Length: 416
Image (cartoon, rainbow, N blue to C red):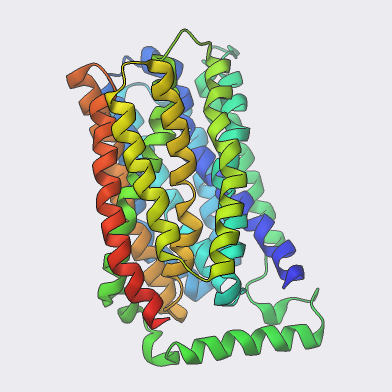
């Protein structure tokens, strides 16, 4: 399993890192792009959030196709098309064109996260999945650590009549498309094809995964229909929506929240944005390791959500901008503890194509939070001329997620 982890996890994490960077780099572009395109906070929030309309509409079909044609071909297709679409963001001329481009970026990227999660479930037994997913999900904070200073540095470029934010989209997007070609050349679909495992290792892994498949119900629960009609899948999607809404607001609004707290340069904003994500890497690994050691998921998910909700209520009530920024930073760390544990829970009870469809549907439902969250944040900022109302909104989202997690988590763990 150590061999498998070193071969599979770094590639999958790199793909998710690039996906998240190309998804949220509009937050760094906004530092100068909003003025160039004359965007209000509401218009920017709408454009940021509309990505998830295209993403949600094509998420489930994308993952069903992945299960049929194989991860290597389909993930490479996703990566190449989203990279080219991200580069095309440089063509935005105003609120409408920015929104259209963001919509098609969502269409291009649809299916990546659930596709990668389904792919990893074909390689790792459930007992090892919490630890493996924690290593995978550190790609999220790493995307900000790497992307924040790089993206904000690009903002100072002014070549060939293009603004810095346009060069940021072009360079980062084309790099991603090249990586997609590499994925097509090096990725393999199943353990049976892994020539870097010995024959005994391939046989053990194949049998272990087949035994789990049978224990979860085998072909009886492996159909796409089961994945789409399972009430538990819908509840898991609703549970995760508040967390996704919050992390989406971090991605699109954190640089602007930091900008509102003082007179910072764009590069300083990039470094400050990266700070809580650096802490998140260590926190994710430690918290997930503790969950794996105790074999408990529900409270390990609920507790960070509840603490983050309290933090948002506190940050909205303080008049000290520096204290507000520190609390929001702590909330970033708390919220990013949740994804690896949530997906370890969500992938426990599904098989085959049902897992592909179910994982995609969960992410599809949850992603509606990322559509409405950034828009509501922008609307509330325009109405109140500040971020306090938006932070209270995130507090409410998280309290609902915590309650649903407790209800759904106990049922999932009882059946697993």
